[in-house]
Image (tube, rainbow, N blue to C red; front, side):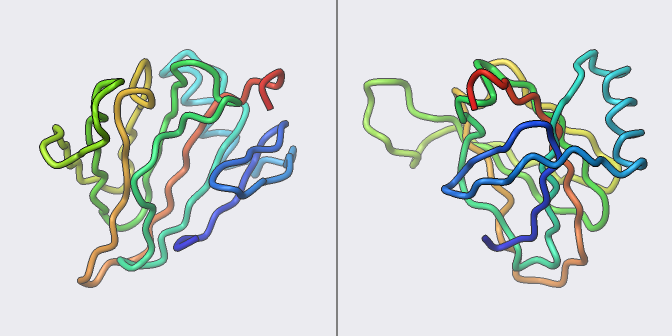
Length: 154
């Protein structure tokens, strides 16, 4: 995995063949951020995937956060701290069409330190996203992705 990760949550979480065990101890600073998100968004997140992008060479490729444990139409709140990185999204082809992204709609969003990106509704069903490698100097970036894991679906 071309980045560092840590997991906090009452349930284990599996994606891309990697399983993170349940981790019940949340650092107080992260707990404060979770409480603030609860006030802003109105969702009580029960889990958090932390990503550390050490430099521009760390990345995550195209994917959707569509694991069964996230339920249907999950809400994911993504907080960024540190250097700016570009977050890219591309529209998935309609069901029944060939999987060809050549002409799909694309969106690029620079995520500056302190930014909050919320993915909700059919975002995971209809889009893929990534943080690509960058080949110029980039400092570290911490990305906190708060989620709700459905215990009955793990």
